[in-house]
Amino acid sequence: VRQDLPPLVATIRKVGLDVPMITTDIVDADTPCTEDMLKTMADLGIPRYRWMPAGALKYTATEPYPAQLERIRPRIAKLAALNARYKVGAMWHTHSGVDYVGASFWDIYLLLKDLDPKAVGVNYDVGHATIEGGTGGWINSFRVMGPHLRGIAVKDFYWSKDLKGAWKAQWTPLGEGMVHLPQFFGMVKEVGFAGPLQLHFEYPLGGADGGKKTLSVPREEVSTAMKRDLGKLHGYLGQAG
Image 1 (cartoon, one colour):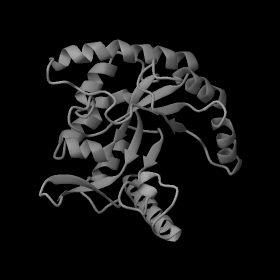
Image 2 (tube, rainbow, N blue to C red):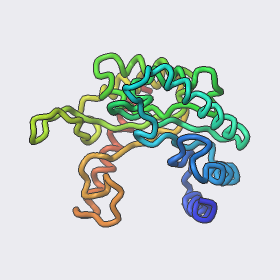
Image 3 (cartoon, rainbow, N blue to C red):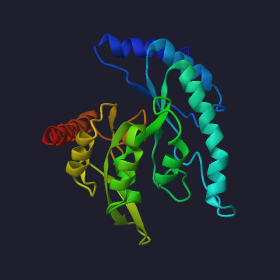
């Protein structure tokens, strides 16, 4: 990070783009190289980073959940103190999944509520939030975050059956799924959100959806899909004012 991030950021800024955040594999202050990453961010003036990879913290059924959360709390407090030292903010990226700490959002609230939102907050993924709370749970989870809402990730999905008849969340182009995007962006407008917004492309896209270096579809097809979703996003944002 200390070697490769500075020239990358310089290249991005040279063409007139901003770098409001980076994505990391940081779980807590003891994650290898955490301090190197935070110091490099601070030196480059990058204010936020995405925190908590999917499934990094998982519940076990053999112990009460409150006791497990109490053990996690000091780990997060230690990271918050480290973030404060470097004047950067961590955004817990929310996921859906069995046994995932944070999938229900109320546990994130309990872990973060007494800590400075500038040091530790939430990167609210509305797709995963809708998977976990399809009818009204996603509304509650958005509102309970309060000042800890620091970033937003946008994608869409629908439920479908796989070849074995099991229901699975299927990612889809923006506006073609079940996420209530007009309602969501109306709520975003209401709270005066001004953090980074990330548009995700996780539906089948010739390998681009999985970060592959070689595409199995024409490059123009990927570009067209991304432009289409970006146009949809601009439409929702405009509609919400």
